[in-house]
Image (cartoon, rainbow, N blue to C red):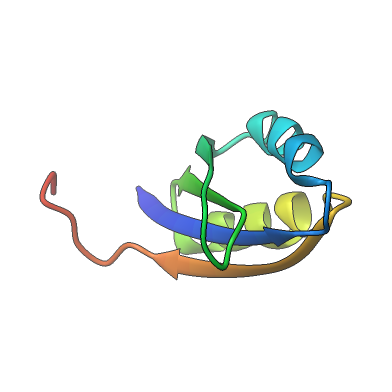
Length: 80
């Protein structure tokens, strides 16, 4: 499995709407509202890198209210 953290900046007043839509995306494991330069951090889990790319570019980027994303692929984990 391939895991990635997606850091999301939303338009003003759109965080709740974006959070609800992210929660419905297949492959999205968690959706957390956070403080700091990003509004939401979500975890994506997929069988391979191509599928992660598809989820981010076709499912997440198309959500109305998302201004910018940064995707961080997990390269190692203590649970591996």
